[in-house]
Image (tube, rainbow, N blue to C red):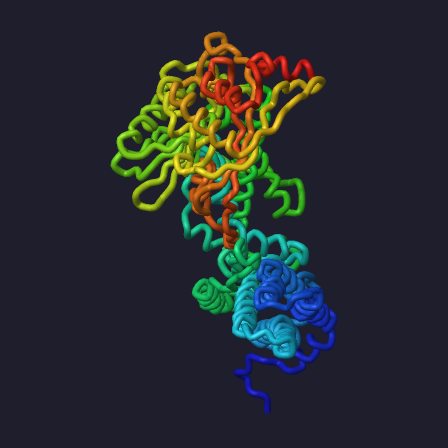
Length: 631
């Protein structure tokens, strides 16, 4: 006699396996092509089978980024097939009229889906292990990590599908719900940061802080970025060989999501027990979810459409102030609120007294959330880190200049000067605005950046920032790199005698001349004669700065070690490493392009002394306008 407490039905399971076999067969074929097929193909293409070549081929075959998407698609398809009877009332009543409990149906369909996902993965794993052993790949532990990863990801994502199934009665709403559950926290975080970034001057989406919990509550995105294989490779110039180290990260993250999946399966089972059969065909199965849907759609679309419209108006130089933006957000949100209700009711009769009262509360909620965003934007806009909190600051006008120690106060003073004119700069922004970027590296390891669009001249700001750019040590780092004071080995170079397109003329010079010219460049830079030809003081009135006629020198040289950086490389550690780590040794070789004018006497005298030219009259000094017009 069959036990009344059974949670598994063999008949339903056999029906699932035989009826939906194309699903798991297609997934098996995908796995065979993606892992052992790709690995075999890459190994066959290798002419020199080194350890690096084998590990790199294995890395490309095991990459989990594609697997996350493939498992998500497979999980949704399984959910649509195995729980398909819940989406039409006829099938729902028929299945639930059979002598099978809801518990049996749920557990059997859950196990069926997991079998569809996990058994193909196991077969792919076994075939790949055999292939690795035949090809002499010893790093089979990474295959085990891959197998654990895809099993854990499949276990979690199918739990999410089972959960989403219980909240809708429409077949094609399931994938939408699945994406919403996986990305709603990410969308909320991104949307809030986007709005705050728009409201605050100097802010942007990437400069507004993001909370870790919201990233974790966006499972697919978090799994994609934090559960993966990493292949760090480097090139040895002396041996002319590539080497690489394959590693894995994210096992703890995966374990946490697997534990959460167990809870999600239980919640989905509870929801199935409470679900009304007659909800089949409805967009939303539970009445208490409907207000959340209306408010969520109204808020999301309201803010998105409002800011999008404001940015469009800004692009045609019609600046939208906060009150007007609020009107746009409320208007779009109010309309979206009732459109969402139309989807819930499956009709257009959505205007009633009760719904209008609810929409009034919704408008109050939007007003409150906008006030909160505005307050946050104002705080972040006006925030300037204290000097004792700052390790260093990079301020980028013509090029990034590093401020350390006592000079940090100069960067802070410049930022405060910009903020004192924030409203003017915001309202008068044009396509030709000057961009200034501040990168703060704080002592606690955090980073902060602000990007400002400056309109017109600003003498105070020019005095603060351009003065630092003109300093000889900063300027030489800009031209030659951070080890500019240690360079001693040079290659060849070129002097451009005429830069016009019609009469272009240049001449080359040797390494000894390049070395002497380097010294001359240092001397002219120390005399403050060279900077004006290579930097543009956009913060000063163009009529005051004028336009300088110049010629140019380019030269090749060698850095003293591979540890050198150009001024832009110092910004690299500001950006987070997303896991696609590729490390290569930096080349020792470098090159510099230097513009100079008639008053750069050290350079001109060196060119004459070294025999590159006989007289300065051989060089055609042209302004940028003349170079363009003659072309």
